[in-house]
Length: 152
Image 1 (tube, rainbow, N blue to C red):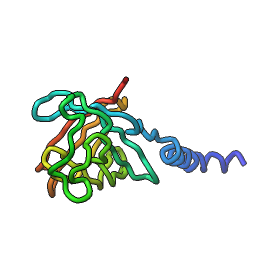
Image 2: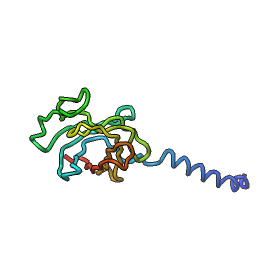
Image 3: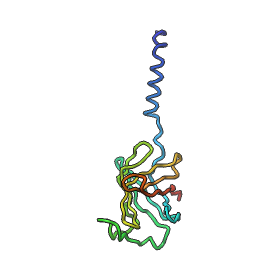
């Protein structure tokens, strides 16, 4: 019995390591909750977006604006059913799914232009910042914003 144990210990260690990687790997911070957005052109704080997950698919709606002039704004340039709808409360990010540390596969709407872009985002290790990229075609052609978790 002792002789057999000596020969099986490498296999036992590999099994423990693999099981630990699969079951014990940290999922990382969740993007669920309220995020403060910053305009990538003006670098001014814009408002907040609330992200939720349903059946593994993430979406985000505009929850507030820091600019009083934008609070009653409707989306005149938005396509389809969003046209003429209030910006506050509008779903502007949808169809995102997690792929390792990245969330992608969805789209994001720019309410200022009415343009819809492919989207991906990643979160910082501490879960306090999110790098959001909207792009056309390949990710090289697009814009990036850094969102900060809303602490209020």
